Image 1 (tube, helix red, strand yellow):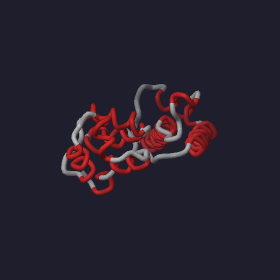
Image 2 (cartoon, rainbow, N blue to C red; image 1 turned 90 degrees about the horizontal axis):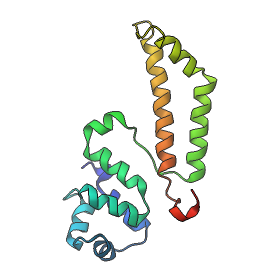
Image 3 (cartoon, rainbow, N blue to C red; image 1 turned 30 degrees about the vertical axis):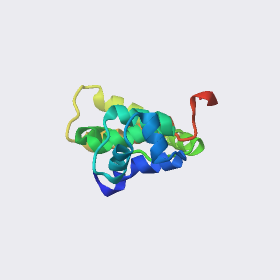
Image 4 (cartoon, rainbow, N blue to C red; image 1 turned 180 degrees about the vertical axis):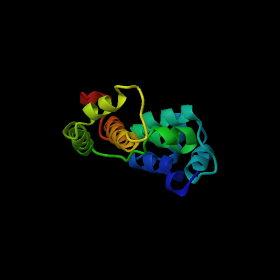
Length: 154
């Protein structure tokens, strides 16, 4: 795993204020496994990452884990950053506003009306896709906000 992501498991555990020993016990794995995951010696299985995400209240951990583990996923799903509810909400609003004020849906439909994206339309088509990708990214960041728990009414 790359250096940037090698310690995501440790970062999330520490942010939750949980010791390696407590995490191991609650996750049903050994302390040695937790250490191996946190030093990049081993990649935790998906089911353990799901449990970590719940225990650490870190939904973004799943997105980071899958993105790092799967090259195909990285080609399709944008990289997300942890954000507060306010930051993520403002960002998605701004991305929707940019899409709407740029009349991008109308432009996309004009390109698509003949069911062909020709060479003269390609640059604009990709610009629209980039804008949609930014909306996607903003949604995922909102979905993965760190402060939200099920009891918060969100």
